[in-house]
Length: 296
Image (cartoon, rainbow, N blue to C red; front, side):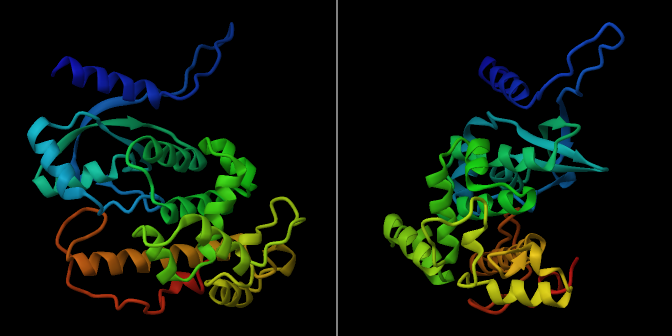
């Protein structure tokens, strides 16, 4: 192992070590430290909450790894008997494309859900930048899962409140408009303004009110239908449309459908880089998965 690789592994271990429990006269128990171990690629599972579209630039990354090796280890967390990737989804896809059998992985024993998403956001912002829509979806998920305000989301990921609220406004745009943003075909400032107009944003909205999840959101009808079907109380609804659980469910289902469509167009799985099964999802086809409607 080269000095550069050793330094990279040491830095990765330090980065995910997490806080330790302060020793007392009666105990010196510390939080479980991360360990470096050799893991089969078949035992590594992508995290469904990963904000990055992992299919981007996999060929270039695979070529780089083939030439100089893997310089930055994959980081994973234990989830029962499974190992779930926290940082390194694109590296995992590239290694599978190269036919690797196993790889060194930094394994964390425990990791709270909010810490997982924050870690993925931070790693992607420090390395290959998330596109604005990927970032917006991640912010929305973090906000819904943990009941955070825009300001609290910003504090966790190192962004200001204006940046977070601007990205969230993009989720009110139509799918075609969002794709134009991802392709760099639409000015971001004007797109944010249009998203805010569509949401009916007002100057004195209540702090943390979920204004971007208003009735004008393109998924509002699905979220409302799910919330009504499950008879969730109206007092818990964001944007006077649906509760956080129902919003999260339909957003996840929509992202899943978009991921399948991307995979079908490219002929390979967007998560692992393997050839796809050939099942094609038509562009703009409605989501019919049961979790968008009846999952608790």
